[in-house]
Length: 174
Image 1 (cartoon, one colour):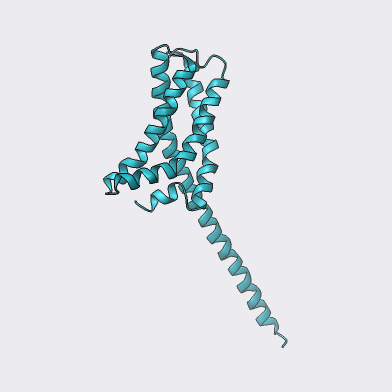
Image 2: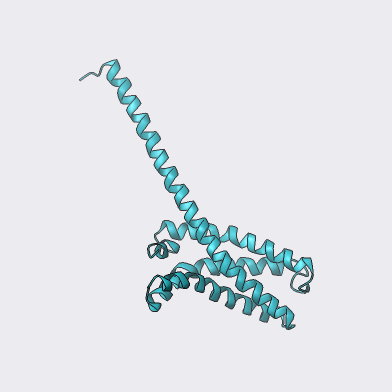
């Protein structure tokens, strides 16, 4: 059957409207995914930064080797990262074993990426690990390393969330 000109125009208009709607839905979903990944990465950065700064400050203050300082910083970064996930879950009534499993599942890959990148950048900056706590080089390299680590961890968190993992699992409990 042959369609009239008015019907063809209407069909074309409807098709375009549907395409714009699909695009808008995809844009909203992408924006939502990006916001959640940004939030998860900021959360990860907070725990990593607390642990990293505290560990390096302790190591430098006590005159430890670079390896010992970094080891303590990494351990503290994981502890603080997991604690920042555990605390609201436990306050919300989630059992410790369940909360710990959620923290491990949601944070481990992100913290690992962040710590590898963060420490690699600090080690790559000449003199950063030998700088004293009162020297701007130490603090500037730490800030830059954390910023680069954020950029590296964002796509990891975005991918995890898009697969229903990472902080997507934890957010189901909030």
